[in-house]
Length: 123
Image (cartoon, rainbow, N blue to C red; front, side):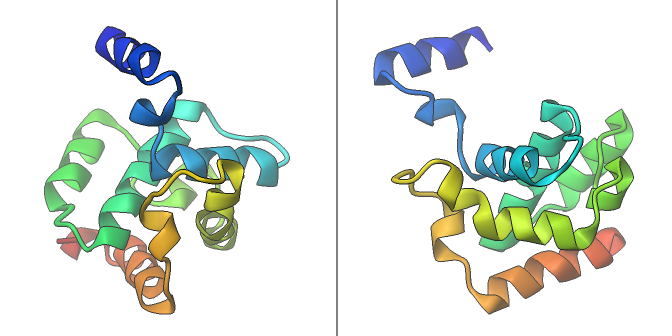
């Protein structure tokens, strides 16, 4: 955490510590009547970024399960529709920051949806 703070200070912005996972969380903050804890939203955003990039996420999911982190939006009471809306609207929360959200496509969104539906076989 301290190193993250140093990186932000050196960059003059929060960009080094705030990628697509945080943009999704910020979109959830705007969308939900009662946002969930920041860390839990960011954890889901991190998993979403893995899935959107097509990265292997099996180890991440195992770790999340081992420590009690959410692996699907419903784990923290967020509907799939609201989460997908947050993914699609995330870029708008910090314009000018390039993330995987800038490369959204119907295929990538479907990959994300399938990943959340098939958690046991997430690669």
